[in-house]
Image (cartoon, rainbow, N blue to C red; front, top):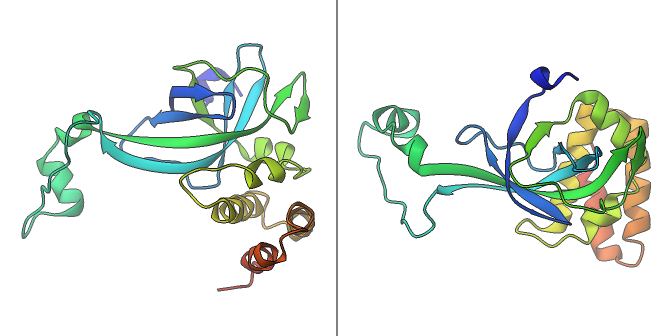
Length: 203
């Protein structure tokens, strides 16, 4: 996709081998939990990552958030009456690296170098999602990730996201369930609730 047509989720403000933190383009515009994003690396590779956590807070960590609402002024109207909030707040999301693409080949391992600071984090297109998730062997990376959101909830959110992005592909979902069973074969108490959560017909 030409650079002018790429849609940015945000800009990297902290980076490491296992993932990165990005500041969103717009306040409250955080990509969904479990969604797939990508960033270009220093060696020309495309690094894929799963959104693992999002938050909106003060730009100044030492500045305490105070209540702004009152009777008759709340929610969206509050932001309209206090336009300065867009300048003193920011939305961030954490993403865990799950693989990369180099020379047209997908690798479900961590990239050798983290993406640079201030690089753009882009929306993964439907083609990107289909290509990267064709073999869900990267689930083991997510299963061993420790972050703010419980690992099992992150896995379920990601699988449901991919299932929808792939046009509710039940064949892929069955493949994903088999991979989950492989990853958690020694932990039946975690495996059963995970598999139950993946049922597309469940409420």
